[in-house]
Image (cartoon, rainbow, N blue to C red; front, side):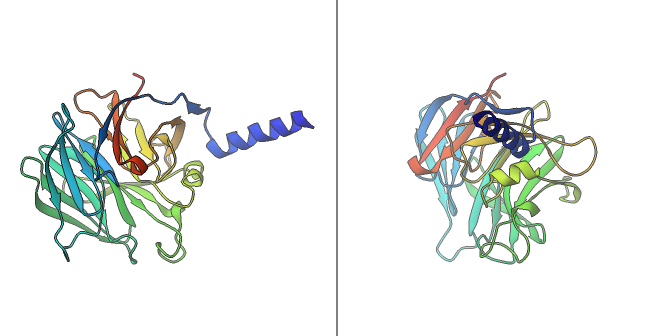
Length: 267
């Protein structure tokens, strides 16, 4: 009876993950920074990191962890729910939505990293969902859109409708991929909250609150991302970033301790 139970349990794990390697050893945390803005995401460039909350962003020095400057939306301003960001060409681009409002409205908001002045917006409108993360890869923009159960979601559309969309430089859609059912099941009723591409074409994604990352890849055919493996981490979901100086470092946040964590990925 015990053997049968163990076999059933093993089969259940394989069914849930749909991948050969269920979970790697936890990637170790090699650095920590205190940051009260650690609510949504962190982005990073060569010398600074940018910690994102719903309506404010802190710019910190990587060398010391000291706050350099901060931006915040004014009372009654247009910002509602900032999400994950990425630094490209001296600009910080953040996914933004009206979460938990419906219908879901999304945009990409952009800051000059030198001055932390908001410089422009890319309106993405209604239709795809709530924009949660953005990255630059293979000469294209990649934006993930989340869907949620009621009351924060649109009628008859749950997390399984979350989608990764590719855009060209004129923000014209050039492709879209659904997330694997095994990953959707592990989101625990929420959705994708962070994602970054690696140089070798792997996609590292995070959920909303689970202490794990989902390593995905584009399919050879069809429109559903492929789950390669699941990695245990200390940080519990939200936005992530790769270090441009040392690509083996993955930056994340820990909401409950208001920290930025830097983890070492295996090469």
